[in-house]
Amino acid sequence: MAERRADERVTAQGAGERRRAGVRPEEARAWEDLVATARRTVGEGLVVGTSGNVSVRVGDTVLVTPSGVPYDRLAPGDVTGVDLDGRQVLGTLVPTSELPMHLAVYRTTAARAVVHTHAVHATAVSTLVTELPPIHYMAAALGGPVRVAPYATYGTDALARNMLRALDGRSGCLLQNHGTVTYGATLDQAYDRTAQLEWMCRLWLTAASVPGLTPSLLSGPQLAEVEERLRGYGQRG
Image (tube, rainbow, N blue to C red):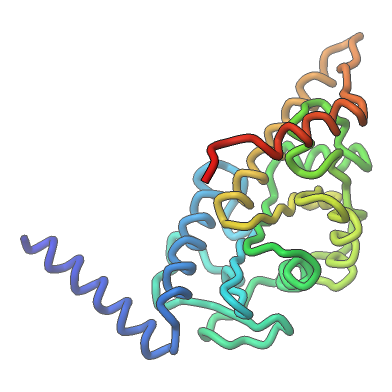
């Protein structure tokens, strides 16, 4: 009973902090989901420490992970949000240094969530090729063969521009010597695409490492057929 009362006090305190910060209920819920997703990137090995970042769009406000704060320390009162021009409208913590990338995605696509990681296998592949070879048909779930955006310093507009070119017609790309970017209609979808991309990179590296053998790759028509089939995949409604 004492533990329950303590939990209720913590919940009430967090709600009070959000009200004082002018955070709307839908933003508070989105922030909880964002923090959970950010922690998941660490827990599943896609991010080390505070590398990588996550964002979600609520109306014209973009909630983002703050710069340099371990995800397990983020609390309900730490809501960090900017408008589509990058002006901070929620919170006092400095937004992620990769804000230009996140905003570029929201300005040019219908994305509602973006996940950026430094996943090991995907980053390794980004140093080897300019496009992930079509080793598996799930490349179609990202719109086709995954491109690698040329290297640019993190947090710069140049990196954001390179990323947008690599994302043209795609929902995910690799960043040369850096990591991954994926987006989706929800945080879960954006995260799942990141995980899928990391798995495909690991698959290609594994197959390509066998001496004397070359992995078979899928053709454009084969990927196009899968992309068509994926439109009707899953449960209806």
